[in-house]
Length: 180
Image 1 (spheres, helix red, strand yellow):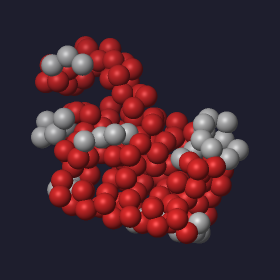
Image 2 (image 1 turned 180 degrees about the horizontal axis):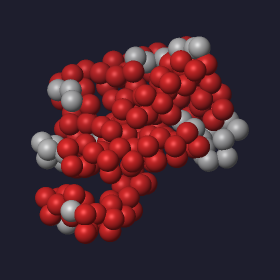
Image 3 (image 1 turned 90 degrees about the horizontal axis):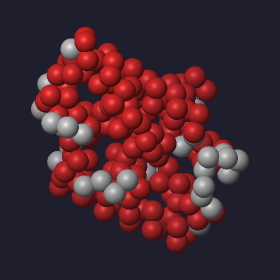
Image 4 (image 1 turned 135 degrees about the vertical axis):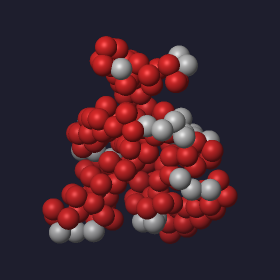
């Protein structure tokens, strides 16, 4: 994408806002979809969360301070929207966030948009037992191949803390896969 400051200016200016936002959506729709999908697991839910994410980005672009990269800011919004979605679903169903994740994993087998096999379902089950922060770090590093520096901006955590979270997540996943 072109120079970020100019692009952000186009997003804020009324005359150029719609065209710039279309470019933004074109550029980030797929990567944000996969990021959200890694968290909420269900295709239809992912579409809803993605739509909410872009609405929030559009509504709040005037508040973007430029302290991080635009994509980091959008990923933070997408992550928070995903976690909020899971919390709301859990509250509505009267179950825990972990149980929501477990139900989503069970539904993956019948999800026509999921291209995984038994091993990937087992991996998702292992990931679901991790604490939330470890899940996020593992998914961003393992599935999205993000650099720790980028994850650090998105989750507002130190690189050292992220590396520790990833290490612990890998150990727990290995243990789970060995025993199940």
